[in-house]
Length: 347
Image (cartoon, rainbow, N blue to C red; front, side, top):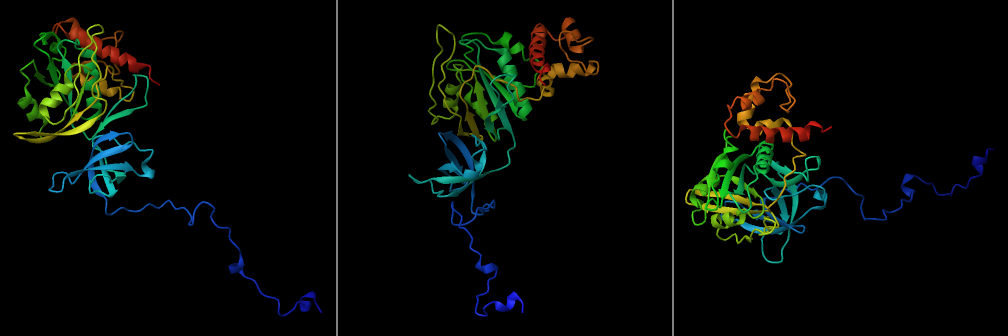
Protein backbone atom coordinates (compact mmCIF):
# COMPACT_ATOMS: atom_id res chain seq x y z
CA UNK A 1 0.00 0.00 0.00
CA UNK A 2 1.38 3.35 -0.98
CA UNK A 3 1.16 6.47 1.07
CA UNK A 4 -1.41 7.82 -1.38
CA UNK A 5 -3.86 5.22 -0.15
CA UNK A 6 -3.69 6.76 3.30
CA UNK A 7 -5.18 10.07 2.06
CA UNK A 8 -8.68 10.79 3.21
CA UNK A 9 -11.08 10.57 0.32
CA UNK A 10 -12.94 13.54 1.80
CA UNK A 11 -9.91 15.87 1.48
CA UNK A 12 -10.92 18.88 -0.71
CA UNK A 13 -9.31 19.25 -4.12
CA UNK A 14 -7.67 22.50 -5.31
CA UNK A 15 -7.20 24.08 -8.72
CA UNK A 16 -5.89 27.38 -10.17
CA UNK A 17 -9.13 29.20 -9.38
CA UNK A 18 -8.33 28.93 -5.68
CA UNK A 19 -5.17 31.03 -5.98
CA UNK A 20 -5.49 34.31 -4.08
CA UNK A 21 -4.40 37.39 -6.06
CA UNK A 22 -3.29 40.51 -4.25
CA UNK A 23 -5.42 43.49 -5.33
CA UNK A 24 -3.86 46.47 -7.15
CA UNK A 25 -2.90 48.83 -4.28
CA UNK A 26 -3.06 51.98 -6.48
CA UNK A 27 -6.27 51.49 -8.40
CA UNK A 28 -9.35 49.41 -8.71
CA UNK A 29 -8.35 48.23 -12.18
CA UNK A 30 -5.00 47.68 -13.89
CA UNK A 31 -3.51 50.53 -15.91
CA UNK A 32 -3.66 50.47 -19.66
CA UNK A 33 -1.84 52.43 -22.36
CA UNK A 34 -4.96 52.53 -24.47
CA UNK A 35 -6.51 55.98 -24.68
CA UNK A 36 -10.07 56.86 -25.62
CA UNK A 37 -10.57 57.78 -29.27
CA UNK A 38 -12.46 61.00 -28.43
CA UNK A 39 -14.62 60.67 -31.53
CA UNK A 40 -16.73 63.56 -30.23
CA UNK A 41 -13.78 65.99 -30.04
CA UNK A 42 -14.21 69.39 -31.69
CA UNK A 43 -11.47 71.10 -33.71
CA UNK A 44 -10.46 74.49 -32.31
CA UNK A 45 -7.84 77.21 -32.94
CA UNK A 46 -5.63 78.24 -29.99
CA UNK A 47 -5.95 82.01 -29.60
CA UNK A 48 -3.82 82.47 -26.51
CA UNK A 49 -2.16 80.80 -23.54
CA UNK A 50 -2.22 82.11 -19.97
CA UNK A 51 -0.83 80.17 -17.00
CA UNK A 52 -1.85 76.74 -18.18
CA UNK A 53 -5.22 77.80 -19.56
CA UNK A 54 -5.88 77.95 -23.29
CA UNK A 55 -8.38 80.22 -25.01
CA UNK A 56 -9.54 78.34 -28.11
CA UNK A 57 -11.98 79.15 -30.89
CA UNK A 58 -14.51 76.39 -31.57
CA UNK A 59 -16.58 76.23 -34.75
CA UNK A 60 -14.38 78.68 -36.66
CA UNK A 61 -16.24 80.22 -39.58
CA UNK A 62 -19.62 78.74 -38.64
CA UNK A 63 -22.72 80.22 -37.01
CA UNK A 64 -21.67 78.40 -33.82
CA UNK A 65 -18.24 80.08 -33.59
CA UNK A 66 -17.37 80.84 -29.96
CA UNK A 67 -14.46 80.88 -27.52
CA UNK A 68 -13.82 78.16 -24.96
CA UNK A 69 -11.44 78.06 -22.01
CA UNK A 70 -9.59 74.74 -21.88
CA UNK A 71 -6.80 72.87 -20.14
CA UNK A 72 -4.57 70.16 -21.56
CA UNK A 73 -5.01 66.44 -21.03
CA UNK A 74 -2.46 64.60 -18.90
CA UNK A 75 -1.05 62.70 -21.88
CA UNK A 76 -0.10 66.03 -23.53
CA UNK A 77 1.83 67.40 -20.57
CA UNK A 78 5.15 67.08 -22.44
CA UNK A 79 3.80 68.41 -25.74
CA UNK A 80 3.98 72.20 -26.24
CA UNK A 81 0.67 73.79 -27.22
CA UNK A 82 1.11 77.28 -28.66
CA UNK A 83 -0.88 80.09 -30.22
CA UNK A 84 -1.97 79.14 -33.73
CA UNK A 85 -2.21 75.43 -33.00
CA UNK A 86 -5.30 73.54 -34.13
CA UNK A 87 -6.34 71.17 -31.38
CA UNK A 88 -9.03 68.62 -30.49
CA UNK A 89 -11.19 69.62 -27.53
CA UNK A 90 -13.62 67.51 -25.47
CA UNK A 91 -15.66 68.11 -22.33
CA UNK A 92 -17.73 71.23 -21.84
CA UNK A 93 -17.24 73.23 -25.04
CA UNK A 94 -20.24 75.50 -24.51
CA UNK A 95 -17.99 78.42 -23.63
CA UNK A 96 -20.25 79.45 -20.76
CA UNK A 97 -18.73 81.17 -17.73
CA UNK A 98 -17.17 78.74 -15.29
CA UNK A 99 -16.84 75.89 -17.79
CA UNK A 100 -13.61 74.23 -18.84
CA UNK A 101 -12.88 72.03 -21.85
CA UNK A 102 -9.94 69.67 -22.25
CA UNK A 103 -7.43 69.54 -25.11
CA UNK A 104 -6.79 65.90 -26.00
CA UNK A 105 -4.84 66.21 -29.26
CA UNK A 106 -2.86 68.52 -31.56
CA UNK A 107 -3.53 68.52 -35.29
CA UNK A 108 -0.60 68.30 -37.71
CA UNK A 109 1.17 71.66 -38.04
CA UNK A 110 1.85 73.34 -41.37
CA UNK A 111 4.66 75.53 -40.00
CA UNK A 112 6.53 76.33 -36.79
CA UNK A 113 8.25 79.66 -36.15
CA UNK A 114 10.97 79.06 -33.60
CA UNK A 115 13.81 80.90 -31.91
CA UNK A 116 16.53 80.05 -29.41
CA UNK A 117 18.10 81.97 -26.54
CA UNK A 118 21.25 82.50 -28.65
CA UNK A 119 22.94 81.07 -31.71
CA UNK A 120 24.74 78.33 -29.75
CA UNK A 121 21.60 77.12 -27.98
CA UNK A 122 19.89 74.45 -30.05
CA UNK A 123 16.96 74.23 -27.61
CA UNK A 124 14.12 75.69 -29.61
CA UNK A 125 11.34 77.88 -28.29
CA UNK A 126 8.21 77.79 -30.42
CA UNK A 127 6.86 81.28 -31.11
CA UNK A 128 3.76 80.36 -33.10
CA UNK A 129 2.32 77.48 -35.11
CA UNK A 130 0.60 77.37 -38.52
CA UNK A 131 1.49 80.93 -39.59
CA UNK A 132 2.11 81.41 -43.31
CA UNK A 133 3.34 85.04 -43.16
CA UNK A 134 5.67 87.04 -40.92
CA UNK A 135 5.30 90.82 -40.71
CA UNK A 136 8.54 92.34 -39.42
CA UNK A 137 7.96 95.77 -37.85
CA UNK A 138 10.95 98.10 -37.51
CA UNK A 139 11.18 101.84 -36.79
CA UNK A 140 13.11 104.27 -38.98
CA UNK A 141 14.25 105.95 -35.74
CA UNK A 142 13.60 105.91 -31.99
CA UNK A 143 14.80 103.15 -31.64
CA UNK A 144 17.32 102.98 -34.46
CA UNK A 145 16.66 100.20 -36.99
CA UNK A 146 18.83 97.09 -36.75
CA UNK A 147 19.38 95.50 -40.14
CA UNK A 148 21.04 92.42 -38.69
CA UNK A 149 18.04 91.70 -36.45
CA UNK A 150 15.81 91.89 -39.52
CA UNK A 151 18.20 89.50 -41.29
CA UNK A 152 17.63 87.03 -38.46
CA UNK A 153 13.86 87.34 -38.76
CA UNK A 154 14.11 86.67 -42.49
CA UNK A 155 16.26 83.58 -41.95
CA UNK A 156 13.87 82.22 -39.30
CA UNK A 157 10.91 82.84 -41.62
CA UNK A 158 12.57 81.07 -44.53
CA UNK A 159 13.59 78.16 -42.33
CA UNK A 160 9.94 77.80 -41.24
CA UNK A 161 8.55 78.14 -44.77
CA UNK A 162 6.88 81.47 -43.95
CA UNK A 163 6.62 84.45 -46.35
CA UNK A 164 8.19 87.63 -44.88
CA UNK A 165 6.84 91.19 -45.10
CA UNK A 166 8.40 94.39 -43.72
CA UNK A 167 6.84 97.52 -42.24
CA UNK A 168 8.99 100.55 -41.43
CA UNK A 169 7.27 102.87 -38.93
CA UNK A 170 8.09 106.41 -37.78
CA UNK A 171 9.27 107.48 -41.23
CA UNK A 172 8.31 111.04 -40.24
CA UNK A 173 11.33 110.96 -37.88
CA UNK A 174 13.94 109.67 -40.34
CA UNK A 175 14.36 108.72 -43.98
CA UNK A 176 14.49 104.89 -44.20
CA UNK A 177 16.13 104.82 -47.65
CA UNK A 178 19.62 103.87 -46.43
CA UNK A 179 18.20 101.20 -44.14
CA UNK A 180 16.03 99.71 -46.87
CA UNK A 181 18.97 99.60 -49.28
CA UNK A 182 20.31 96.77 -47.11
CA UNK A 183 17.50 94.58 -48.46
CA UNK A 184 17.85 95.37 -52.15
CA UNK A 185 17.65 92.17 -54.13
CA UNK A 186 15.61 90.42 -51.41
CA UNK A 187 12.13 89.20 -52.32
CA UNK A 188 10.38 91.30 -49.68
CA UNK A 189 7.21 93.42 -49.73
CA UNK A 190 7.87 96.70 -47.88
CA UNK A 191 5.37 99.14 -46.32
CA UNK A 192 6.24 102.50 -44.75
CA UNK A 193 4.27 104.26 -42.05
CA UNK A 194 4.42 107.74 -40.53
CA UNK A 195 2.49 109.50 -37.81
CA UNK A 196 -1.00 110.12 -39.18
CA UNK A 197 -0.18 108.23 -42.39
CA UNK A 198 -0.45 104.57 -41.44
CA UNK A 199 -1.24 102.45 -44.55
CA UNK A 200 -3.82 100.32 -42.75
CA UNK A 201 -5.74 99.37 -45.89
CA UNK A 202 -2.64 98.34 -47.85
CA UNK A 203 -1.24 96.28 -44.99
CA UNK A 204 -4.68 94.84 -44.26
CA UNK A 205 -5.07 93.69 -47.85
CA UNK A 206 -1.87 91.66 -47.44
CA UNK A 207 -3.35 89.93 -44.38
CA UNK A 208 -6.55 88.68 -46.00
CA UNK A 209 -6.64 84.90 -46.18
CA UNK A 210 -3.43 84.53 -44.20
CA UNK A 211 -2.26 83.84 -40.67
CA UNK A 212 0.38 86.53 -40.10
CA UNK A 213 2.72 86.68 -37.11
CA UNK A 214 3.88 90.19 -36.16
CA UNK A 215 7.45 90.44 -34.80
CA UNK A 216 9.67 93.36 -33.90
CA UNK A 217 11.95 95.09 -31.43
CA UNK A 218 10.27 96.66 -28.40
CA UNK A 219 9.15 100.24 -29.00
CA UNK A 220 8.92 100.14 -32.80
CA UNK A 221 5.13 100.65 -32.85
CA UNK A 222 4.04 97.06 -33.40
CA UNK A 223 1.20 97.21 -30.87
CA UNK A 224 0.05 100.55 -32.30
CA UNK A 225 -0.14 98.94 -35.73
CA UNK A 226 -2.03 95.94 -34.36
CA UNK A 227 -4.57 98.22 -32.68
CA UNK A 228 -5.08 100.12 -35.94
CA UNK A 229 -5.71 96.90 -37.86
CA UNK A 230 -7.82 95.27 -35.13
CA UNK A 231 -9.61 98.13 -33.28
CA UNK A 232 -10.93 95.89 -30.50
CA UNK A 233 -7.49 94.37 -29.79
CA UNK A 234 -6.66 96.89 -27.05
CA UNK A 235 -2.98 95.91 -27.04
CA UNK A 236 -0.95 98.01 -24.62
CA UNK A 237 1.42 100.54 -26.18
CA UNK A 238 4.58 101.97 -24.66
CA UNK A 239 7.38 104.41 -25.30
CA UNK A 240 11.13 104.40 -25.85
CA UNK A 241 13.41 105.16 -22.90
CA UNK A 242 15.16 108.48 -23.64
CA UNK A 243 18.32 107.38 -21.82
CA UNK A 244 18.84 103.85 -23.15
CA UNK A 245 17.01 104.24 -26.47
CA UNK A 246 15.25 100.95 -25.82
CA UNK A 247 11.57 100.24 -26.00
CA UNK A 248 9.59 98.95 -23.04
CA UNK A 249 7.96 95.53 -23.34
CA UNK A 250 4.20 96.10 -23.53
CA UNK A 251 2.84 92.86 -25.01
CA UNK A 252 3.58 90.06 -22.54
CA UNK A 253 1.94 87.18 -24.40
CA UNK A 254 1.29 85.90 -27.92
CA UNK A 255 -2.33 86.20 -29.05
CA UNK A 256 -4.31 85.56 -32.25
CA UNK A 257 -6.68 88.32 -33.32
CA UNK A 258 -9.21 88.28 -36.15
CA UNK A 259 -8.58 90.89 -38.83
CA UNK A 260 -11.74 92.03 -40.64
CA UNK A 261 -11.22 94.19 -43.70
CA UNK A 262 -13.20 95.28 -46.71
CA UNK A 263 -11.55 92.58 -48.84
CA UNK A 264 -11.96 89.76 -46.33
CA UNK A 265 -10.59 88.38 -43.08
CA UNK A 266 -7.32 87.01 -41.76
CA UNK A 267 -5.45 86.36 -38.53
CA UNK A 268 -3.05 88.75 -36.79
CA UNK A 269 -0.75 87.02 -34.29
CA UNK A 270 0.85 89.59 -32.02
CA UNK A 271 4.03 88.58 -30.16
CA UNK A 272 5.99 90.23 -27.34
CA UNK A 273 8.79 92.54 -28.48
CA UNK A 274 12.28 91.02 -28.48
CA UNK A 275 15.78 92.50 -28.61
CA UNK A 276 17.44 89.32 -29.88
CA UNK A 277 16.44 86.35 -32.00
CA UNK A 278 18.66 83.28 -31.66
CA UNK A 279 18.99 80.96 -34.64
CA UNK A 280 20.45 77.93 -32.88
CA UNK A 281 17.74 75.69 -34.32
CA UNK A 282 18.11 76.83 -37.94
CA UNK A 283 19.57 74.71 -40.72
CA UNK A 284 22.72 76.67 -41.76
CA UNK A 285 21.93 75.89 -45.40
CA UNK A 286 18.96 78.24 -45.13
CA UNK A 287 21.05 81.26 -44.11
CA UNK A 288 22.33 82.02 -47.59
CA UNK A 289 18.89 81.39 -49.08
CA UNK A 290 17.55 84.32 -47.01
CA UNK A 291 19.85 86.65 -48.96
CA UNK A 292 18.19 85.91 -52.29
CA UNK A 293 20.42 88.14 -54.43
CA UNK A 294 23.61 86.79 -52.85
CA UNK A 295 22.31 83.25 -53.16
CA UNK A 296 21.92 83.71 -56.92
CA UNK A 297 25.51 84.91 -57.25
CA UNK A 298 26.75 82.05 -55.06
CA UNK A 299 25.85 79.62 -57.83
CA UNK A 300 29.14 80.69 -59.48
CA UNK A 301 31.19 79.92 -56.35
CA UNK A 302 33.57 76.92 -56.27
CA UNK A 303 32.09 73.71 -54.86
CA UNK A 304 32.16 73.77 -51.06
CA UNK A 305 32.69 77.53 -50.82
CA UNK A 306 32.05 78.77 -47.27
CA UNK A 307 31.55 82.42 -48.37
CA UNK A 308 33.60 83.47 -45.32
CA UNK A 309 36.29 86.19 -45.59
CA UNK A 310 39.07 83.63 -46.19
CA UNK A 311 37.13 81.67 -48.83
CA UNK A 312 39.15 81.61 -52.11
CA UNK A 313 37.47 82.68 -55.36
CA UNK A 314 34.13 83.45 -53.64
CA UNK A 315 31.84 84.85 -56.33
CA UNK A 316 29.94 86.98 -53.81
CA UNK A 317 33.11 88.66 -52.55
CA UNK A 318 34.18 89.31 -56.14
CA UNK A 319 30.79 90.85 -56.96
CA UNK A 320 31.07 93.18 -53.95
CA UNK A 321 34.64 94.17 -54.86
CA UNK A 322 33.54 94.99 -58.40
CA UNK A 323 30.64 97.11 -57.13
CA UNK A 324 27.98 94.92 -58.75
CA UNK A 325 25.91 94.83 -55.55
CA UNK A 326 25.69 98.59 -55.07
CA UNK A 327 26.94 100.75 -52.21
CA UNK A 328 25.39 98.49 -49.58
CA UNK A 329 26.78 95.25 -50.96
CA UNK A 330 29.72 95.14 -48.54
CA UNK A 331 27.40 95.55 -45.54
CA UNK A 332 25.16 92.75 -46.78
CA UNK A 333 28.10 90.43 -47.32
CA UNK A 334 29.40 91.28 -43.84
CA UNK A 335 26.00 90.44 -42.31
CA UNK A 336 25.93 87.11 -44.18
CA UNK A 337 29.49 86.26 -43.13
CA UNK A 338 28.83 87.02 -39.47
CA UNK A 339 25.87 84.65 -39.45
CA UNK A 340 27.74 81.93 -41.34
CA UNK A 341 30.73 82.23 -38.99
CA UNK A 342 28.44 81.70 -36.01
CA UNK A 343 27.28 78.38 -37.43
CA UNK A 344 30.62 77.24 -38.88
CA UNK A 345 31.80 75.92 -35.49
CA UNK A 346 28.54 74.15 -34.63
CA UNK A 347 29.18 70.44 -33.93
